[in-house]
Each structure stands twice: as C-alpha cells, then as structure tokens.
Image (cartoon, rainbow, N blue to C red; front, side, top):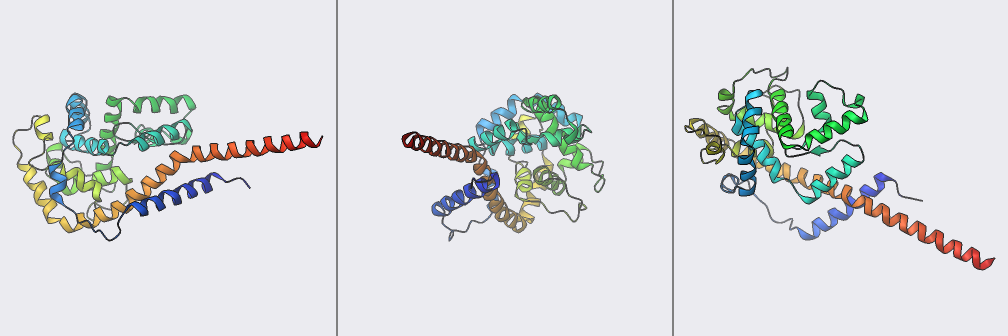
Length: 287
C-alpha cells in the first residue's frame, strides 16, 4: 500500500528526531544568557541593514515605527535564514502553498490580509504577483513594517502610540514582535506574554546596539529603559527561551521533513517502477 503524504512527513520527522537525539545531550541544561544575546552581532546582516537603511527608514516613517525596532525584527529574521528554510520555502511556493517569503519572512496570506484582500479569493496571477513582490527586499520590508503597525493598532490594543513612545516601551515592542512571530492574539496588552523572539528583538535595542548608529540616533536614554526591562524579566526570558528551543526543534523537523519528502517520494516511485519492470520481464519470459 503506497504511503500517503502525511505518512511521508511523519516518517521523515521520526527519522530527523532520532538523528537529533543521537547528536544531542539531554543532560545539558542551558540558561538564558542576556549577555550572549547582546554581545554577538552578525556583521554580514548588519551590512544588509546598512545597505537597506533607506528602505527601512522610509517604511518605518510610513507606518509610525522606530526604524531601529523595524531593523531589529528584520535582523532577527535574517539570522534564521538557513539553506533548509530557503529550500522548503521555495518548495512550498512551487506547490502553490503559503510559505514565508523574503527577508522578513512574510506569508502571502499575511500580505493579502494587510491589503484588505481574502487570500482564498486570490487568482493565480494575483498570488504570483504577491510572491514576486515579497521576494523584493524593498517590498518585503514595507510589508514587515505594515504588519508590525497592524499588530500595534489591533482593536484589542488600539494604542495609537508614536515611534518615540514605542521605543521607550520595551514591553510593548516585545509583545508586538512576539505576535509578528507567532501570529496575533486576542489578549489585552497586560495579559499578553512575550516569547523568546520578542525578547531577542528588544535585546537588539539596548544602549550598545549598533542599530542606533546606523540610523543616526545620537541620544539613547531609552536604551537604558530597555536594558532595565530585560534584566527585570530575566526569569521570564529564560522560560521563554526554553519553550522556544522546543518549538524551534519541532519547526526544524517539520521543515526538514518537507525538504526530504520529495526524495522519499522519488525513491518510492523508483522502487515501484523497478518492480513493474521486473514483473514485465517475468511475464515476457513466461510467454
């Protein structure tokens, strides 16, 4: 009986999980290190931020965001770029599914929603246009800014907060970044909890962040508030990091499953064709 698509993915996930367990030590416990988050900057990604400073500044201005906050979100998305992610995004795109695309990892369904469109009603041509636009850095950055602004101004939040106020409210930026990462929630601002992604975005905005220099912000009193917020919430950040490691592992296994599923399918097809050829040869001999 041929395997179904779900069985393919389940089988691949199990294989990846086994390999993961063999290569990891479950006795090792990692604690959240704020210092690690603050000290290591990827200069290649910082170069990308500098090269696209104009696009980031323009989009931040259009959607009432501090450019450093927008840049910190894009920076974090760029750190998550891997060959597997790129491959699976292209694969899902070729299958006309809804992958995350481009520098800010925006879904086609999200960009359509932000434009007031129903994703399910898009024509093939419109879907292709969205996909093409999201592969362009300037357009992708604009949708990242548009989505962050949308989250800030959701009906259950409706904060109407200025960029200068927002950069001084790390607890708000952490929640907005969290929901950019996992999707919007119906909870109030006081009820919402940041995840590791939200803390990481805010950690990119402390007083020693190179993002301030890139965007020409000379005085940085707000960054002391940010560092104080991170220190005060160290335990919550540690718990969020532990949860994110589990989620990241699941996400990695799922993406790798998508990546190897076509090869499993091709292997299965090759096996079937080989058996058919052998059976045909046996029938010819009998004749």
